[in-house]
Image 1 (tube, helix red, strand yellow):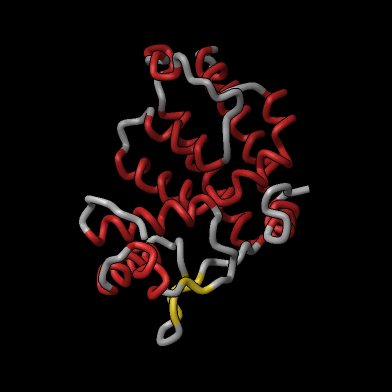
Image 2 (tube, rainbow, N blue to C red):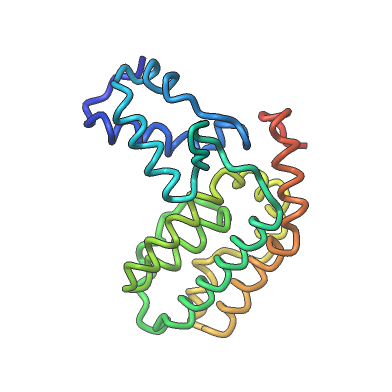
Length: 210
């Protein structure tokens, strides 16, 4: 049983949200509210509320009178998510004033690569003053986060060769930044079928994708 000082709803939501982002639930699997109640030691009502909230955010599928299910990894949906992330990231980059951009927030970042597609979009969105964009980026990041391991396996080397977002921004060259972002997302959009296939294969080999 997990102990927490958080209110019951927040506890249930955080627990489920983190597990969904980490890919701890298999695509297409059903999430039993009773299992969450037992693990967290809370009542069923906040668990059902958390499941409903996550379904409203597109992180779960609500099949009425049946239950809540983890979305399958559909290559068409995945391609659309990457295309949307690319469009938003490019638009956000074009709106930035790179000459006055404060890059100190990136100082000391130990990450050696850009991470997954959702992380890149979220980072760029937070550099803008657009709170609506930040919210949309966070949702896309949630939906793409379970595929982070697959992205690293498929694109890690090419991402490293292309360089990091902080270096693109440091160039203060908007055209170069837009070009790099477009390339970063293009390889994912074009490989949506491969990503979906690798994610499905990873169900059976969680500790080692290939």
